[in-house]
Length: 322
Image (cartoon, rainbow, N blue to C red; front, side):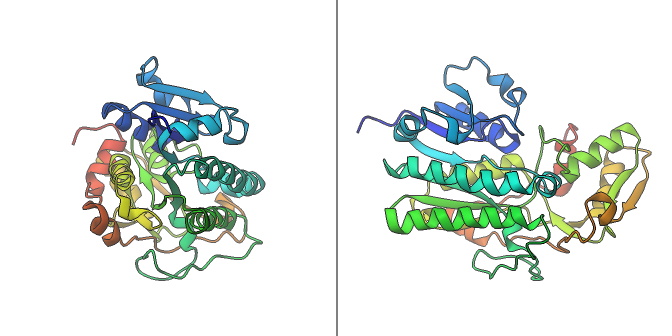
């Protein structure tokens, strides 16, 4: 086989993907991006337009006629192409279910032909309705009923995980799975319901920050550059093949407190409003009260866990100096 020529990144024009592409280019790698630009944007890669080491292919994975060649010549594949945001998932469940499994299956088939190592990004949503105070990669999963469309995303990503691990066991494909928890940072849009950029945009405009539910639900946020560091380290960790890793921050904050911190950090005069879930989404919407990862496994395998404080995360995401 000829020498591998590039790293293939699906979804590389998206929020996380574009930061990963930037990191790979800075390290001297040649990068090929496949992105249908449904949620990603050329603007995210504009600073690197014309870079001799970057190629952007505007296509779905299933419609890329060069996929077999690109997978064969890749030294590594990062699969980040996915639907983003609970709001989009609730409104487009059919698209989520059809696109996620189909695209992942086609990519895995292309990768296995030449045993090209692949990292699949999954989501903390797969932990579902579990009431555990913090989630481990070995935990049982508790998914909500099919009548609630928000669980379609969790199920689609969990199916992707099962499929990838089956390829690893039965076909010998080197696969690593990363479950991402609430990644935030520059270039993230609030267009699909992402809470921190939505809060920041409202605070800057002097508009009310809309907190869904009672605001007591908690999340842990992770700066995108920390996520990218973890992904790159996993790429180079042979022992991580066939394993699942949580990637996320561990500083827990309620949504109401997050809104207060954004208002305070930006010096905004905005008020905070509580919006019932039925008004924000649909009647019967199910949300998780806590979503905190255990990241000891990540640290054990690659010597890293995200450390950027929430205070700095808010400032960086809001374009303020730290």
